[in-house]
Image (cartoon, rainbow, N blue to C red):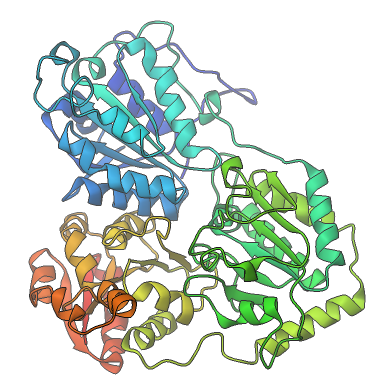
Length: 591
């Protein structure tokens, strides 16, 4: 998305003085404009009045999408940020408006998605006096709530403070690693005129920058490990998604990102490097590639375990001896509960932009704090100067090919597994699939093959039910020409299915596939396994909701089908109608 920049020759101006009478609200919109942000999500309130009026005056430059719940608005903004590579902005009112958005913002922070929550406050003269919906100087400490979810959070208490604090929020949300930020604006401040010494930005480069390089010495050491090892693994996490799949920032472009991905594939082929991804990183490297062993950990393929352990009919009897991790925090689901099986008989190197992630999950030989894209560039450059032994490359390639002659996951006739396979077969290229916290989560990891430019999105760091149900709306707004599909259970669908109404209002052609079994099956199965006994499923029944009627009442085309064979034509039709009619589509699969 184009960014507004003013130049003098080849130089970007460092900012300009504000026009006479320019307000905090108007400068806020200027910052969003130079960031290329034209979509905001939330629910209006009277304490937002000045900013809402300015948004109204700036239509159609900005569209304020009125959502059905503030948590849903934050999930929608998260989905928008994920598919566009830009900033998702949530605009909510004071008190419960701000607190309702916290969960969605915390999910974005945990998953390293760029999100900015702007919440209102009553005027400051009411602070400490029991002002209606006050959230700063009262028992409801909104600023503290956001700070305690690891956010950058600030309250603007003077128009002279706005530039410094707001740009800090933008740096926190759009830096490396990305994250969520929150700014609270009292009603009197947002309407206040700016001091004359506050510059108006002409470019994001006026107040933030993205790392352009890393220390090349660690990249050379990593290449040496990968060349010398008998059985290395290159492990890619969700932190590689931006570096390999989409442009971000003023200097990036789709051609450069595509070239980086192609060069990484050539490096993998030259060294015969087996590539494994985390669950959240599934698909950042094409799973159909000859050296891909698919994903490890929760919902993982069988292939990585055979390769790493050397056990099984296709194994070579030896444990693997080098692991290089790029852009993964190595959390519980990624590592199968930090399994010792993931530790190689040799060096373990982890690269991440967040130093707090290095060595957190598993002990390292060494860690590298670096922007993932910059480190991949350095790794490729180092690899071009090294030629691995030919017999080692041949042995690696033959071993991977032998392992891949067996299925990547056990054969299954479970309804959710068959359904996920059908979805994967019918998806068009460049689709965005959002998996909710449901039976579909592990099924989508095991039984879908994801090759870029198609992407699979999860929120495994927190995995809230209903996240994908709302996030897919933002995805379809951000990528209106792509197929955007949410896969969810009936419980999660009812949590935020009301956002179908948002999609219908703004003519958003998203598709929901809802697995309907009238119970919270994931929890019931887990408890039955842990504690034994019968009746768990009956304890968590959902009252036989009529989901097709619900979806139609909110403005969607909806149909209920029974079985995978009936699902196939219904899903194909929903993908087509979503694109042609720009209308939400819901397919309920009853089992």
